[in-house]
Length: 195
Image 1 (cartoon, helix red, strand yellow):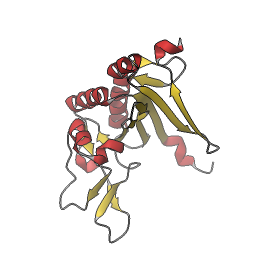
Image 2 (cartoon, helix red, strand yellow):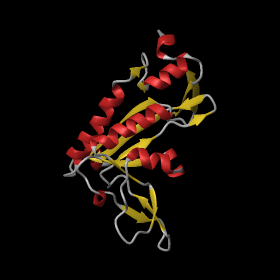
Image 3 (tube, one colour):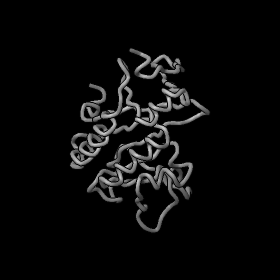
Image 4 (spheres, helix red, strand yellow):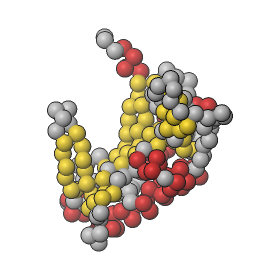
């Protein structure tokens, strides 16, 4: 087998649609459960990268609006590993595949259209931190799976987002790539419209 190490990698995700109200509620839940946000990029620090509440990190600026990471409860900032992209760089980038983190991608909004977000984890099952990361991912995944689901599609939709859609104030937008490089751009019907 060419890449034997791949058999030990756990990669899984939950896709969702959440406006700012639903996403804020998800992040408040995460913070209350003990998750802490760590940045994707940071300046070269003299001390460990500070951890913050996920909701606070998301609200603080552009970095948290596109993608960031959370450490599951019980893990410390020492579990997030950073590196310089060049020897003289003053910014560090998170090494996600060796850090005990869960990726959080908020939904992107353009006018009345809302793009798909996700939580994602890709971690080595042989790592001693695997159980903590997997348990942390599963707790967030269970929270999202309690939301309304699309018939036949692997998406959850937050309650406020669903209400906004039913009132025709928001459209759900699925942008996804295929192995052939083609991009699918479609507006999805709300669950009650698809039945």
